[in-house]
Image 1: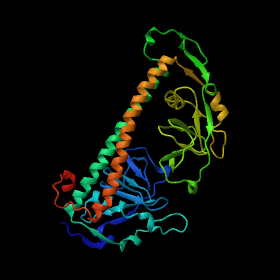
Image 2: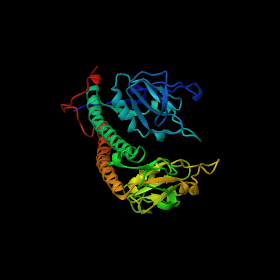
Image 3: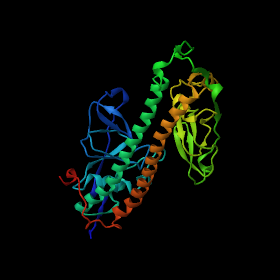
Image 4: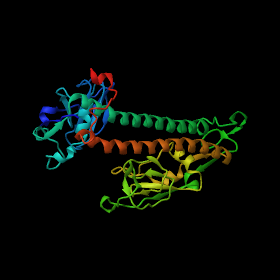
Length: 368
């Protein structure tokens, strides 16, 4: 059984403030520019060699990132300058358990003062155990990442199929099709051009403040996608959500019943929603407000689109539905993997689950 070393945070790792990099000074390159919660872009130069562990210093606190490539941490972040002989991947997982947002020292903008962490009492396992813990948790993250890549491929397959059939008109049997002129250019003669308002309606979502949401599994959609969960739905799924305020024209698919708030529209139509989901992503929705971006519903309803015959629609939806069902299974697997990883994380870090005697393969780079 591992004997944990009781020490202080400053003896575990050293955090360093990130570096200024104004947008006008950024030059396109291969090195990630890391903000407090995500990679914000790429630059021609880097400041820190990998491995990198980064967390938010100002604005957003508590989120921890790991990078295995050279990077530029922005001044809104803190990055681990010295791992002091500890395993970097273990340090990443350890920081995730600290709930760093608790150490906010800013009166207005949330701010993490690294000096407030230095005296924090921590218990750290020996290096071999650190590496085993990191290997176990990394296995979950690797599976999740692999599933995300597969989901992306499936989504791209459906999008490419839509473009082939309905933009390039390379649908089954196109070789024998006769093309005619239309307001949108040359189209197969048995296809139709219709205004969106003839085939669907954009319906307003309903306001639902954060404090009025009740614990549940109904996704709440805004213009940026899922913004939370509630215990009752407003629209039966599956359905399509379109950003109305803020992220104008963003298009989201919800397989399950959902609650669109007042920054979004939802689509009402008798046509196959799967086809409309990809069709709407090709439309140029206009902003009707210079101050606060807002989707002009009348303009959206006036946009024209090409409608194929029912048999072509049905065949496309069969393929697209199959891609989505495969992706949905992978999302369910990822939910289970995340839940298990998050349950194990504090137990492994604290030593409640002892792995010191387990025979676990350690990546070569971790042993070096």
